[in-house]
Length: 214
Image 1: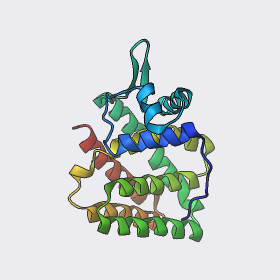
Image 2: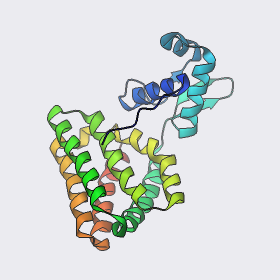
Image 3: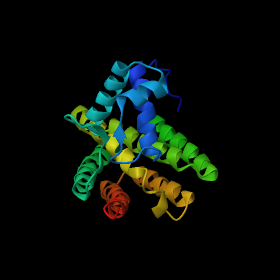
């Protein structure tokens, strides 16, 4: 599914680069981000860097400490637990609410995401796989049609993606990751709310078990 061309501001571009750095673990949890160093690195003004950091702070990825600077957020076990509990509540409801709204076009789009995911298994690219994971889940949440639920999910999806960056060590193979999502789509195709509820909970519970042991 092709993404529309979007012209981004400098601050959005910098935020994207820093976010990706955190996801790729080039930037570590708890690391200090210096405006002066980032301005030099990206060859931009400090005001553009400041705006980028504000974007990340809104997403919960960085924290600004008075007279101490800006640091990448260090998520506690309690933080991870809260996000995962919220994710379970939102996704189980959204997936079930999406069932009567799923049309052939939606299934085709989800199949395309899985096709791209399968390609990435051969490339053994965890970062792209996790991006596609979020795209798959986000797509179904949007189909549910509840604008407020979608808004809440949008507000936490960056943090969910951040947690996923640390899960590659727990999957036996790239293929098993793909198969999990194939099973989720198969569950959706049954259009049985009990089956999809169980499938979503099992999927998130595996993630929860690993994340809480980080």
